[in-house]
Image (cartoon, rainbow, N blue to C red):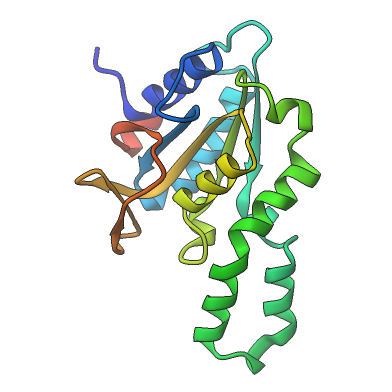
Length: 194
């Protein structure tokens, strides 16, 4: 039986949580058909609840963090909402691109991710709904900032798009180089979720 990209994503996260070493940090990314991003996030919830295999190693934990919910709690987002139509679309995009990633990670570390868990490789953090941040923040920028903040947790990001020639392509946009994370071959497809 061939392993699906969805199963390979979970198995790779478990291997890292069990002590495997990565390129730099235990970060794992998996391409997901864009229309399935939210469905994959919901399905991962069943894994977090222990209702799907693979089982976690003894003592390991999984924590989903919903990036769209975190976005609404950042100062950059509130500023853009407060300014409303008074801000030009180009200024809005620049403001969010300049500040959002750093604020997302700061908010995550202050309110979501316990300091002790951030120090543990056997604590898996699933960053979900990445597509809601596009084009203001990307997986690579989040991973860079988590690395800069010395987060040691195993990080998993299912992203809406595909890997093209070793680069991330989100929603069919420009393909970009990304933070060196372990990438899952293939793409999570609807049949993987059956």
